[in-house]
Length: 584
Image (cartoon, rainbow, N blue to C red; front, side, top):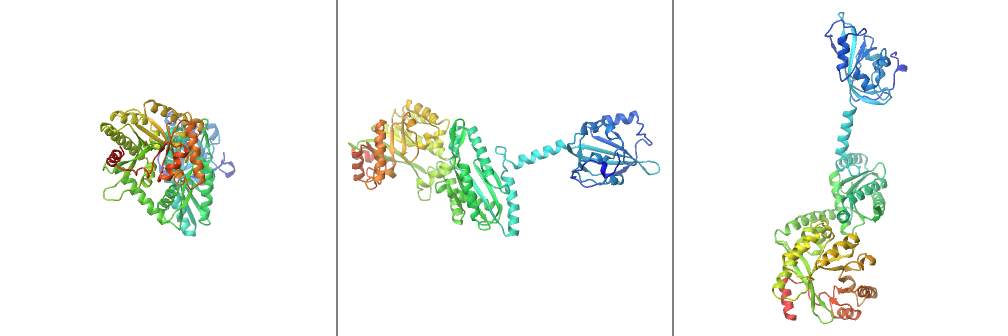
C-alpha cells in the first residue's frame, strides 16, 4: 500500500504529543528482516506488545504475533503498507510522508481490521547501517483499551451516584463553580435548588430499603426529566437532590422550575401492587442575590429548604438571610437535643383524663418537657419536629416509654388505682423492628399490669402500611397493651382498616373541641366522630377541654372521657399525686 493520503485509513485524535524516535544501533548488525532469521521470528513471537518493523522507506516488512492478536491484521494485510494505515480516521497523526522523518506519535487511536478503534501507546526506534542511513524502523505499541476503560470506570465511580446514576455532589460542585465563574463574567443568574423528600424515612422504615431505593431511582429519573439538558441534576445523598440552573433570565424563572419539580416528584409511584406518594420540600438559593461561591449558594438553598419544611412541607421557598440564621439555630438545637438525655434535662408531665359522667380518673397522658441547663424551657412544638427530622425521636421516644413505665410502676407500689398511662409514639419509633420488644421489655421491667400502658398513635402512622401495622397492634393488645388513635380527624384513614384494628379509644383533636360551642362546622365534625366511635364500640376522649361549657356540650353529644385545662394542666408526678389525693 502506498503512503498517499487516498490509500490511508481514517484517523482519530491523539492524546499525546509527537515525539521524534531515538536512534539506536541494532544489536545484530546486518540482520536481514526481509528474509528473516530464527532469532528474529522467535523474538517477535515472544513479545506481548505489537511490533511493526518497517524498512528505510517506512514500508512494513514484518509484524509480531501480538500485533495480529491486537489488531486482527495478518502479515498479508499490512506488509508493504505504511504504518499510518493503522490509524483510525479520528486520529490526528502526522501525514504519512512525515513518518520517515520521525513524526511518529507517542499515543494514537488505532484501527482494528474489523473497523473498531482502540487507543494505543507507541514507542519507535531507528536502525542505521554502517553508512549512517536508516535501514529499518521499529514501532512497538500497546493496546490501552483496558487501561482507558479502568480510568473511565474509576472516574465515573468518583463522580456519579451508584443508585440513581445521577452526578454526585463532587461533580455537581465542580460544575457549579464553573457556572458561577461564567455568570460573574457575563452578569448571569444561577440558581441552586435543594430537593428533600418529605417523610422518606417512614417509607424506608415501613416498606424496607429495597422499596426505598426504588423510590429514589424513580424520583431521580423524574427530576432529571423535569429540567433542561443544560441543567445539572445530582443526588447529594440519602433522599436529597440538588439541581443547578444556569443561564436564568430572572430569579422568577427558578420558581417555574421548582413548580415543575414538585409536580413531577409528587406523582404516585406504583410498586408491588401499591401506590406510594412522596412530596418534596424545595429550597432555592440565587446568584448574585444570595451568595457568590458554590458551597455558600448551596447552604442558602439548604436553609430555604428547611424553611419550606417548617411551613408544612410540600412547598418551595427562596432563601433570605433570616432563614440562614434560623438554620444555624436549628443545628444548635439538634446538637443540644442529642445531649439532653445524658444531662438529665428531660422530664415527663402528666395530664389527667376523667370520665365525663362522674369525674373519675381513667388515665393520664405522659407529655415530654425539656429544660436545658442554664437556658429557658423549649416548647415541645419546637423541639419534637427537629427530633423527628434528625432521627433522634427514636432514642427520645424510648426514654419516654421507660420513664412513663417506671413512674406507673411506682404509683402501683404506692397503692394508686389502675388508671392507664398513655405514651405517644412517633412514626419512626413505631417502624423500628424491635419496637414491640422495647415496649414489652419496659412493661416487664417495671411490673405493669395489663391495661395500664396505652400507646397513642396517629392515623397516618397506621395507614402507611395497614397490614403490617395491624399485625403489630394485634401482638401488642394480646400482651395487654391498650391502643388509642391520637388527633383523630386531622389525618387520613381507611374505615375498612380501622374497624379491623384492635383500637380501644379515639382521641378527638383539640383543634375541633376548642371551637365546639361557636363553630357549627367543628360541632358537626365532633358529632360525626363521636357517632363513628360509638358504632365501632370505641371509647371517645376529647382533648382541649378548657371550660365547663365545652364539657357540658361533649356530655350532650355522648363523649365519655375529657382531657384539658378545665380538668387539670399537665403537671409533674408529684403535683399529680397531690391532685389525685385532693379529689379522692
